[in-house]
Image 1 (cartoon, rainbow, N blue to C red):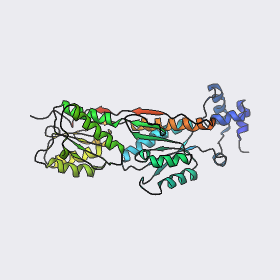
Image 2: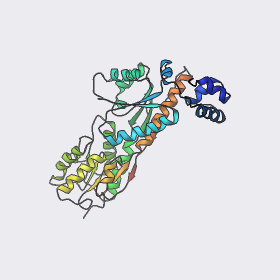
Image 3: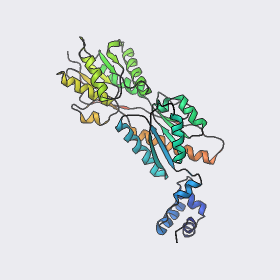
Length: 342
């Protein structure tokens, strides 16, 4: 005969409700009771009936929604969310999408219903689209957003990354090395991170009484190819910059490739800095100065907030107070930046 939850409860000497709370990783169960239940589960080789849980409407999955070509970034997010899911007995549903699709909200809602998803982690640019967030919330979707901002907002619970401050630090590092003609290569403008990093760069120039030169600021995409194309424009100007701050490491790697192709030595002829501390920054030569963004930790925190909100909403009909938690990427100095040559 198949072992039931009542069998586990009888062996553990607790109620079947206590067993249910323990195997669903619900809070406020005494450690000793948890040990008794897990010991009984192991002895009886009890396997919870997932189908029955779904029929009862007990969703046990989180959804990760993203529209981002950066594979390193997505893998970091997946690993961070999975780590938190495993701690609390949740599964992870990964859903890539096109943020600009006219049916994006219907697509997300269909996925949450079809896959019995309890809540969503939204990433840029979707997490920074108020109309999408509003429609999902009106439909009753529990969500936590990862956003680029200098502080949390109250639209929903969120984890925010202070790209502005981190970009300021990178630019200041280049200024401290004696660079005055510092170029900026931007990423996709529909990602707020590109705008925040650009603003941080501009603020550092302003605070150091350096002019922001329009010909040294180019918009682009978060890709190696964008770095190649835009750095070719910059490095073939009559007066080329002595340093380039690229909006992410892929752009910076493209810049390094172009500099080498044009016969420039890095950093003696040109200093290059990236952002994110992705494998691109460590696998290039010289290794790239960058800003270390703790992707896994950011994602794990977002998942933890989401699971907490899901459980609090089940316990109370009074609503749930939003949470905001911030990270600031940290400057990592490597060999791609050096003093301006005289």
